Amino acid sequence: MTTSTKSVVVFSQNYLPLNRINFRRAVTLLAMGKAEPIIFFEDTTFKEIRSPSIVIQVPPVIRLYQSAERPWKIPPVSRKEILRRDEHQCQYCGNRKQLTIDHIIPRSRGGKHIWNNVVIACADCNSRKGNKTPEEAKMTLLNKPKAPKHPTIAFAEQFWQEQQLVTDN
Image (cartoon, rainbow, N blue to C red; front, side, top):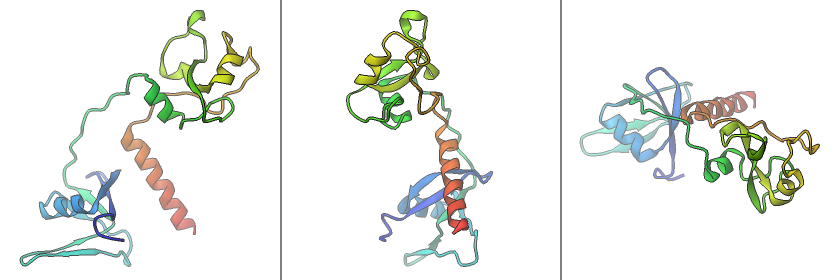
């Protein structure tokens, strides 16, 4: 693995995993004194960067001294965001072709265009459901619709699940 493609996990000052950054960005944060290395295990492997005046050891995980909290708000309901949330698949049958937006409670019956009332549906399922609720059409949703999670929370959950898999093996 080349140093340019190696990624490093960044923790906040409160030890919350924030995201993955590229190796070059990690070196910059360490060199500028904005982050410190975290060593979880004694056998942690470091990548080393040398210059005439400095040697920087970069572990797989670093911690920021100060977190720059950026305000985050739930994105507006849009086709792009609904597709991302529903992983580009019909929430009734799992199909990945001819995708449309379906309102669980149809708009004509008072349903709103909000996160917990919209899902991705293929054209066949959307026309089969028509102007009915899923219960009336005898169709079940694969996943309950909800607003997207904060990216940091989503990353932290994924990070700890990966760590659990590593420690279980």
